Image (cartoon, rainbow, N blue to C red; front, side):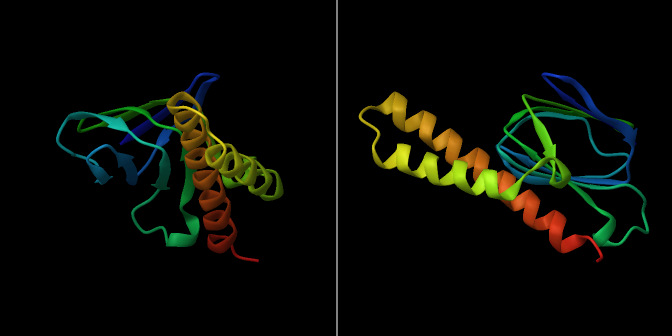
Length: 141
């Protein structure tokens, strides 16, 4: 099936895939060729992509997303998100520092707007660090 991962900056990925794991508002879903059509909200989390049926876990690619919209048909999947980053895109030290700043902002929030923004930042950097960790653990030395 064809996967098209589209960000605000354009098409991040447009390729044939065998399996996807996508974080949605209803929970993580697995998508294979021939999947029933659906439209769902994507939530901040990790998209896991297996390109070929026989690929081992170390050949999966992971993307950190901030949420968006998912459209699935039997032959294609379109995921529209603000941003999608791979482990290669993420600098762990910068994300760790950003997470610390976000946690401090959350602790010091004076109103609901500041608290909501801090929660979004915490979620974003937590997901980015998870993708960086998955990338590091699933790549052979």
